[in-house]
Length: 114
Image 1 (spheres, one colour):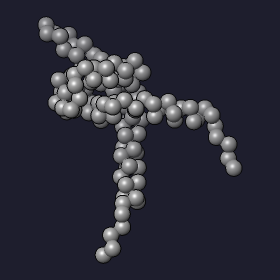
Image 2 (cartoon, one colour):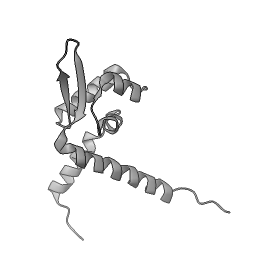
Image 3 (tube, one colour):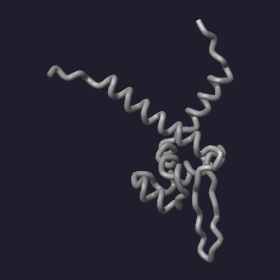
Image 4 (spheres, one colour):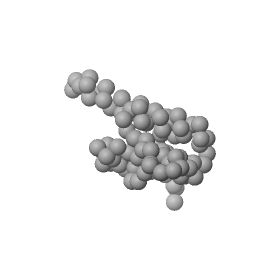
């Protein structure tokens, strides 16, 4: 039997906790390729309230996954984007999770009796 590396397990657990928020994955999928304003996120995720999106965005910003960028203009304009150094690993993780979920659901689908 192989011993688990506690540091590895802790890092995987931390990564899973970062994705726990109700709207976190929705937000990350929406902004992984390009920055978005809060209004764009609200259109992309209509079932999330402004308050819930703002709380999730702040949590992701605190964790260092995304950044809030205040644009210089006469009207306040804020965009949210994935931090460059996490963009590629995050995109790969989301793609792997999607593929894993798809293959898992196909493997567990009821067999037809045709």
